[in-house]
Amino acid sequence: MPGKKNTVADALSRCSDHVPNEGEDATAITLPDKLFAHLIRPAALEESIRRQQRDLKYVPQLKEWVDKYDLQKRASYYWNGTALVAPDLESVSRALLEIYHDGPTAGHPGQAKTYQDL
Image 1: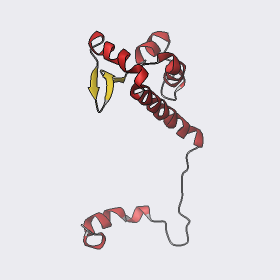
Image 2: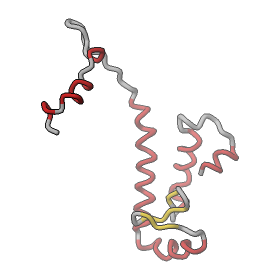
Image 3: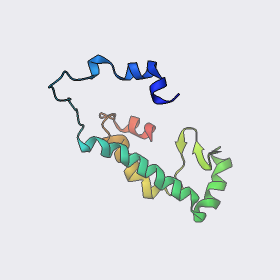
Image 4: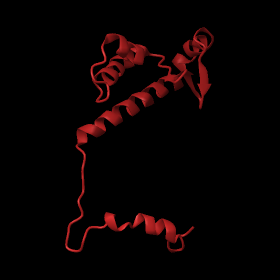
């Protein structure tokens, strides 16, 4: 429904408690850049793993693993349950460990929990 005709949504998006009083500046809360780096790194690592899977040199290995590890192919990528399969583990293992061990939600889970999460 076009803008002015959708009066219900318009009224909800313009709640009086969301508008500063006349003469007041709107308060903005900004988050530090370091918080966003934690989101970018896992996404970049996932893209790196996806590139590995598309690389022709890993195709034979992935085909071998399909039966051996009961991998599923979803959206053109190989998965082991909910985990994206990394054909070249050495190239991503350190980054994975850092994400799961040093991440803001990891706390300090210990060796067994970190290993299980990986």
